[in-house]
Amino acid sequence: QRIEFRQALPLGREWYLKAIGGYHRSSDFTRSRVETAEYAPATLPRDLVAPTLGNVRLSFGGVRLDKYTTPERLLTFELGTAHEEGPVTLSPLARAQATDVDQPWLRFNVAAPRWNVLAYYTGNRLNGTRNLTANSLLYLRASHMAVEAQGNRQFAGARGRVIAGVEFGGQTVDSADPNGAQTVYDRKRSTQYGSVFGQVEYRLTARLNAVGSARWDRSTLHDGRVSPRVAAVYRLTPSQTLRATYGRAFQVANLTELFVRIAVAPPIHLSPVETALAPLVGNTSLGLGNVPVLAVGNNDLRVERIDSAEIGYQAVIGGRLLVNAGVYRNQLSDFIRNLL
Image (cartoon, rainbow, N blue to C red; front, side, top):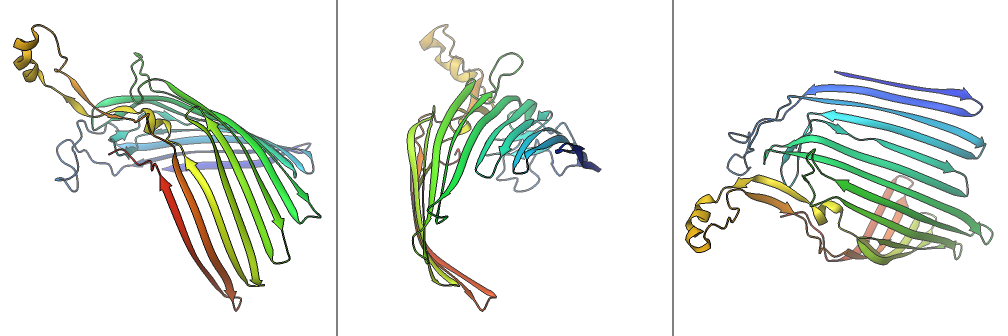
């Protein structure tokens, strides 16, 4: 079953409103893997518990307000949320069924021809999502907030254009259950970041255009880093161009890759080992009666780096055929990959 609505209308005095909402309900393809997997049973691991919900439910809604303060300046405020129950997701760690998930968000934007300011928030709240593989409950309160401002201006008689901006933001995750025990991360984690960026475009000759850009980033997860990029496009004929680009970029590990601590299998009972060692350790408990099996993040991951260079050719033949060819080379260092 599926029902949705959408309404948009002017409110007067250059105010405009849009509202959307909906509700979806369906059965699900998910099958229990407690006894055996429905396919590749010799390869796929079994779950410890079966899904408790047999249907998938999704509800969502949002409201947007627009205000033209001048014919060229637009003020936008938008917020909404989504709620889901029932879907089973598969990750490198486990299968999990969402039982109560909320995803609120909001956005505020002021747009003008020469500048733009944007602020936004997104959230993710898990209340008792069931880890089917390890038979545990997952809780999460995550948020991401950021503010970005940028401006642009032409120069040299419109032969060039410059764009510059700044961005600041932060992320927070907390996976404590009602008793205060963490269920996804090792502890409550947060990070803040900031960046300054800019780009210059210039028409050097009637046939040659050049672009140069750079971005400086720094966060609590890494030191300050510069990401430059340059490009040139030469027009051989009105329908043929040559291009050359070079760029250096980076990617920092996310909070999950750094700090995850989640059960991926039932605890192992090694009480016989503890009993066998009792003559050596006396009455000292070794805690081997309930040994957890965890996936643990690596907080020593370095920043992943990539250098890219490309030379390319593009042509339009007969107004109907597009030909595009290129040669490129990428060099990656400290590559970040999924958990083994």
